[in-house]
Length: 111
Length: 116
Picture 1 (cartoon, rainbow over the protein chains, first blue to last red):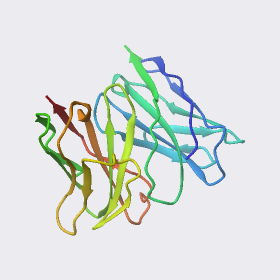
Picture 2 (picture 1 turned 120 degrees about the horizontal axis):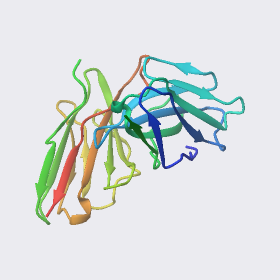
Picture 3 (picture 1 turned 30 degrees about the horizontal axis):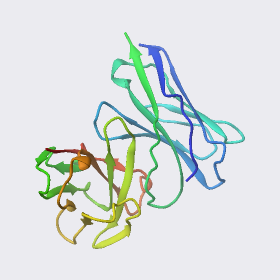
Picture 4 (picture 1 turned 180 degrees about the vertical axis):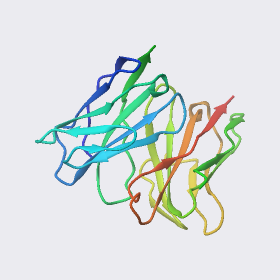
């Protein structure tokens, strides 16, 4: 699986959109971009994934650049409960592969 | 539908003892994964199992660690003769064998192992 690069930390004001960037310049054509988050020592929680089209679900939106070398996770209206470490992961699909968790971005939502 | 269950949630062992961590996957899931998270680090893959088979154990330490996922019952991660460096949070995840959520891994709450 390709490596990803994320900023170590970010702050976001409560109620504002949180935009979390991820670089994956060596991504292969058959690798998807996945986002998970881990809220204070809990088990990681799946957020969203995509291949090349932008995706949206009830939690977030995922914007993938046309060359697929980077992506942005958008939390449209951040709340205090969104404070967590966010992991961007690229992996081949389909396949029940393991997930490679890097160091992620620690997002702090400020009241 | 109950989520992934792990027990115990906290486990304290003295050096040299054995630790047994249990994971019950979500109903209908036949794939189980174990990850370890050392303090202030990201999760590291250990092993991937399907019922009665180890598919990928590339992340497992060569000694003292073993895992199984029997036909009946939970998956077990076993650590023999624990050392202080084994202190960590151990997370289990499961995924279904088919369906729209085939590629999602659902994580349990973890077992926090402390070795004294």
